Length: 170
Image 1 (cartoon, one colour):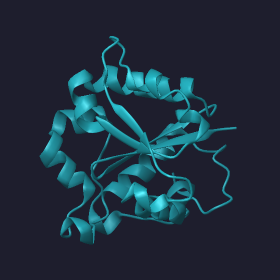
Image 2 (image 1 turned 90 degrees about the vertical axis):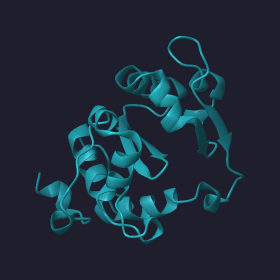
Image 3 (image 1 turned 30 degrees about the horizontal axis):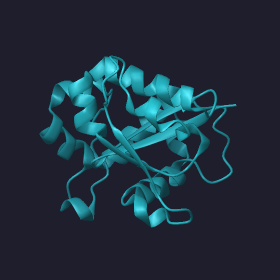
Image 4 (image 1 turned 120 degrees about the vertical axis):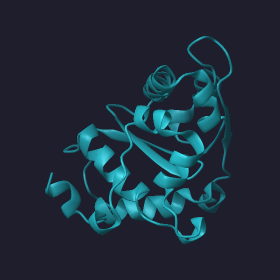
């Protein structure tokens, strides 16, 4: 059974499959991201992490500490039953549910599928971004090297699809 971990860095959405929902599994993803993009960029993207009190974030100090033992981020928790405190992540979650409706098993998903979903969501223009896409805004903010290391791709607006068919067609 697969679980997921979702990140919303600035305006860019990232998601990763995990085989278990533990702080160790999240730490592994954080470490992989830090190795891929570097400690400085990790802190720039994830310097402050706001999350719920899920078990996977149960050891915040271990997650906040980078692979070199230096603080890479600060984790803060939302109040219980206050999903609105997580800002734009709720809008992204709604888009994710357009592709993976509630009740859908993630067991059939591959990381490739997840990247595909992420790329389509990040290529959807947002009113809150004055019509820009999170992908384009992040490209301008973080540069093409970071975007490439995060394995993000731009999807042309006329090819964006936020329905369950997105994964069934892959």
